[in-house]
Length: 496
Image (cartoon, rainbow, N blue to C red; front, side, top):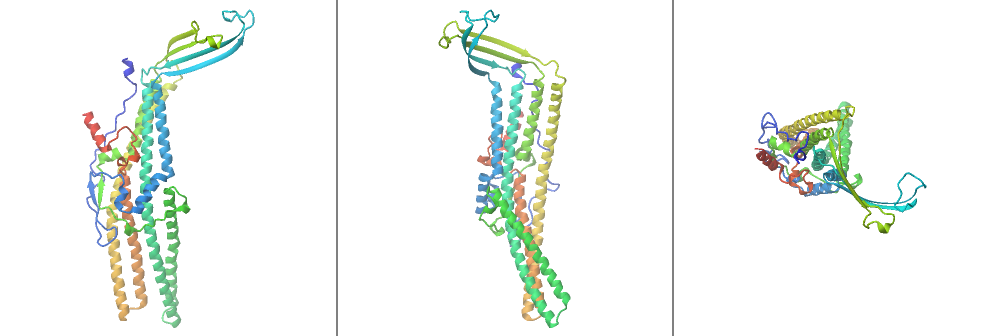
């Protein structure tokens, strides 16, 4: 009884949270703002804030919400991840069967003839040709003295958790990819519209120059320069159209459809609202909510349990057996008195010499644990890098949008002055067209800067764990049903 209460091998201990207070060398509080610009609002980082489960709703776009919900239901990669979790869960339940006795029932019927004078025993009636019917029940049980079964189930459960967190990561990545694709689609469409206007402006400029060249007002060099300018602008259009079509195809695939069945929604940046309050999880919370970190931790746990499995394999194994049944020459006599039999048995087997196999398997399990531990540390560092990179990107995106907005304002002022001078006769029409061209180019740069803010905002939510613990359909990959941050603090209090 005392031996049955222990299990060989190390007991897994949850890694401690990193002893850092910030993600970047200089803590961020608020980004720059750009007045009267779509997506130019200042964003404030709420340190210690919680991530909402439907974080994409903060963009206040019903078509985007509908597309993400459809993708979470219909995406085939996500369905495959859910099926993988079901496989891991059933494997865990199957492994738990080793804790219980194994009971089998059998029935055999045979007709046998023994040669006269044979040494083999014959029935009491000395018949050499007879029928034999034998029903029996067999019970076997291996007491888990050294914890082999418990460590095996522990490893299977940890593997199930790892697959569960992998599925959750797939959900978060899917929703972030849909937002990024929608933002990119809106950005490309705006850039295509601006490029069409640029082509029209440059075409008009070329027509004027050709007319002036025919009248002798300008040289052929001026016409050739404008032809080159028009060709360069026109050359950018096919690339933008190709990228837009690819984004359409991507949105269809993410929603579980064929490329030709792209969703009808057409996104515009003006229809998206930039979230102003951005929750920023504490570093200690990040390792408790990022699914890739939790998956690496579960892999560590599984590797730790495997050390116990390989250790138990080097120790004696006890097997208890029991058989009960009946045997008779006629099927009607099977359950009559005097036909029954039973036996009880116990066996102990211990490995003596295996050519070093079991020893090296144990050493390999220990090395696998070291590998899993280092992979966990690497995953944690990558998680912190993702958050730090995204925070820096958001800070610089705000500065970039501010500069792009200033450039667009300057180009607009230049265009207004050029229009007034042209109407007053002080400037040529070519100067006006040049100002219009500069204005459209600044609008393209502004659209790109706006798209960067939206896309990197979505990337921040993804880097912080996506708030999956607030979504009921995500499910928990382990036995803790509450918020992971609260569960982590509860665990710490219990340890104290």
